[in-house]
Length: 120
Image (cartoon, rainbow, N blue to C red; front, top):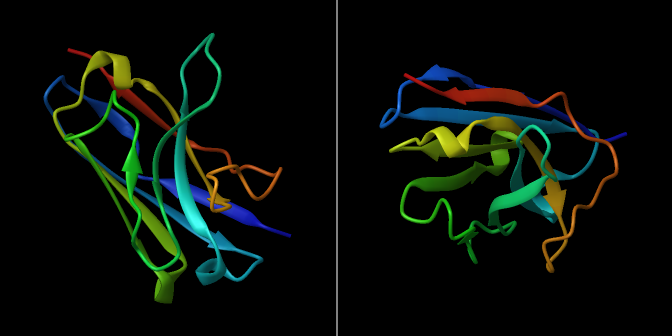
């Protein structure tokens, strides 16, 4: 059974930075790409960044481009999201999942997520 444990969230002022981590287990991590998603109150979950299994073909949502950086360590079954120049609109619960080549989530089970709050 696939499991995801997200960490690294918190309260940060606008313009600040956070680095999220997501440790995966229960499946062969290196077989799949990884995606970071977020869900703000009253909104649907959206994909903000994705990275393929070999670390290539990285793509970002327009809203986070040039501010967020996704990376992964297959030896640690972990995907990261470095978030810089944070804005109040980045406030959300952040989740990760394995993804197929077309960026659709591989697993229906999600972790608890990690809360990111950007506020002064």
